[in-house]
Length: 166
Image 1: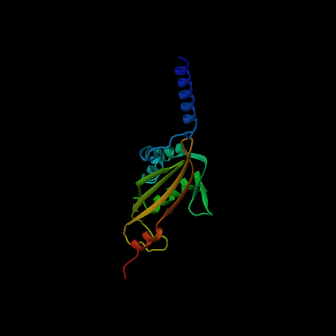
Image 2: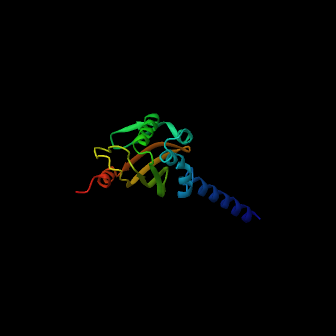
Image 3: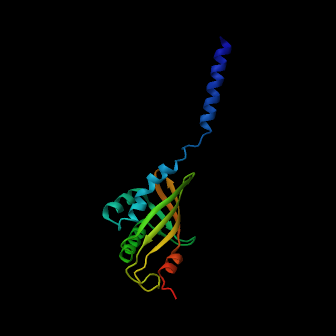
């Protein structure tokens, strides 16, 4: 009888040790990560509508920073204003998540942006042409909120697609 009690106690102790060695949170699946950050990409594809902006605001932490380079970042409201301005130049802008990966508290998105500028675009004269480019975003998540994002878009590729052929 004592052997059985000792075995149960030992098994309980081993179970507790195993549980305590697990990470504080289980890593999300790519599908869960995509669902979490979908409001951000909706905002990038719905002309900055009031509804999409409000949903994105709920996802984005108040002190969030969006890095377009290693040295330059914008806060939440400045980024939302920039996105709204972008829709004036590219009213049909769409941003699609093509692949979502998760690593710890980071969500990595390989995306694709498409659109047709209605005016000159980064110095390229308006021609009515459209572009299709790739983007890479790395979003850091804490407590269900985006706290930091690093992103890069192939704007040079967009300019090449929009430029007149010689």
